[in-house]
Length: 531
Image (spheres, rainbow, N blue to C red):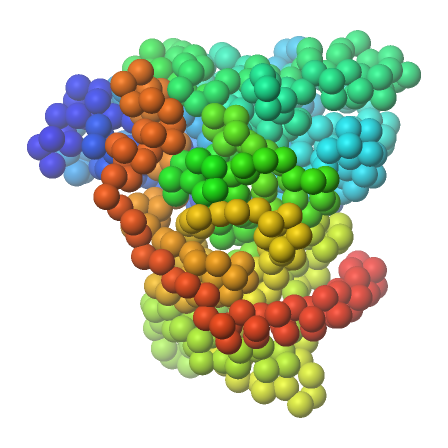
């Protein structure tokens, strides 16, 4: 504690703040890369006028509450105020659409990654670029707004993501880390910048609209991990710390997305490494040795924080439906006069899944709180289905929901591993799905038919990964590449706990998937019929 206090007082610390889908979290680390203080704030997106969004009030109120919680943690643990930090960085859920005019006014409410109303734009841009453009990417949001004839488009002066917006407000710099930027618009692997050939194609595509801007005019600059991306301004310090204690001048690393921080937090930035993040959404990342043979609708090509190509399978839905059912069970228990600890509730339910039949015994669910791009749904209707002769037990019920949480992910990864024969030496898991020991890993191993490792430090997740990127910026001259820094400095000697796939789980998941895909027309009927 004495060493940590000394690091805080003398600014030998690194701060990462990440705005996830349901929680904003800050992690402060020292020069041993160990977390020494944390802060958090819960929040939730809203469906307003058909758009999944967070308001600017939500964003700033949440960020300030999270930072205040961190500062209070420092004060209570170490008896000192947090006045300065060695370096810091902001990360957030990737993709989405934040468009501003020349005065810095947000032109339309923030459109998050969760929206699935950009199918026409996604299809057309994929055709024009010969490169898969997912619906949630910023360029798809922009082009869909153009196709819709939205009046605000002509007034756009700057287009960015949530992480890019906050970084801009805190430092005055309009910049993104390359990993985050790769979720806005395709990156040229040779330059580490936005692909100029595709930019020219886009400008030609919309030339008849007569907008007063070209695409390069409104996109942020792109920076790689290790580069300095500005410093905290006086105004930014006041916006972050309402008490006015934090001093300006703190160096910022490039803002990143939750995919890049997840790769960093799991030591998965080198070729043939991968990670899977499973929480509100679920996505897997595998760093590629070579390009895929062709574009796939189910697979996105993004980059590591240093610009190396990554195959990403992103699914909009994972644990939200499980959380809803857990809440129902808790409400039932409380109605019966029982007090149930939430952690014990989840642990019990997850462990029951291992008692179920390998193929879930004829039960089926679709966890589509929102639309699901992998299976082609623009909206979702959570559904639970059972055959009349199904084995309707708690074990099968929970196993079904855990399988359903990963079913769309499995579809994309089956293409990657079975058709493209992509090689991977290590897959590391992180996120709430893995909180119950062994269970989440075992189900994930069955879905991917590959060993899944969880490291103790990976539990700190994205904000810890962001803090590591801030530290790397200050230490890169002596530590080499980001991969070397993680391997030799941060994760040295840590191998984690690995769970290998169980043959019966793998074959059971395959049988479950046959029913899952056969039942997709029922989900379509629900979306079309229930408005």
